[in-house]
Image (cartoon, rainbow, N blue to C red; front, side, top):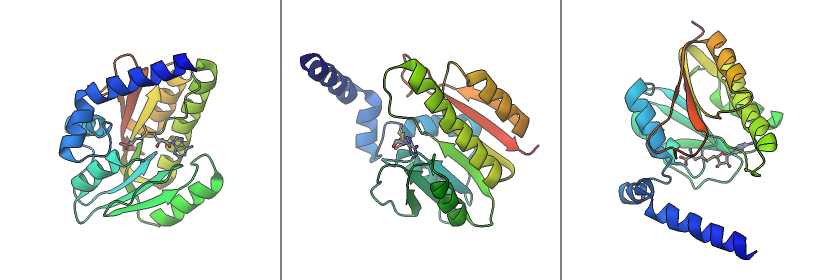
Length: 207
Ligand SMILES: C[S@@+](CC[C@H](N)C(=O)[O-])C[C@H]1O[C@@H](n2cnc3c(N)ncnc32)[C@H](O)[C@@H]1O
């Protein structure tokens, strides 16, 4: 127990000293993660005014805040997470476990018939610390995000998804390449260097 307490104290120290945490507090964002999406979007120019964006694994809401800014008044942001999320102006939120069919159905019903332009997924499973358990869980979440992307994106649509490098990564990239014109990975500056996390950026759906 003592070891656990000291490691969570170390985590808190690192978290408070983190420049992206400080910046998020100063600029009114709900997460340091928002700077990952900002950097990806600055490079790849995916989210534009008037677009419809789906944000999977949205809580506490940093990516949704960025998406709302980018789509503007004429756009639409639909967000979802297994956890509750404090309401955000101009964000339609659906709470539920994305691995459940009922949640997928609610999302599809909310999206309606108009195609989505960009699917975002920053979903990450609760980490057990055991790669053999965590890696397949995280790959499964990306597969489900790819599946929803293929059901909801219009021609030319995009997907940005967190992926952990390791077993299953290459086959995911292959799957994405079969559905999108252009597939690459980004490691934004706000993504901790020691993390195996990268972001799959796929554009040109159905090309
Ligand atoms: C890194 S956080 C997302 C941070 C968010 N992008 C932001 O900027 O505020 C990952 C999220 O994925 C969610 N998540 C993990 N597994 C999920 C699942 N099966 N269904 C829905 N959400 C899930 C977690 O609850 C968590 O809120």
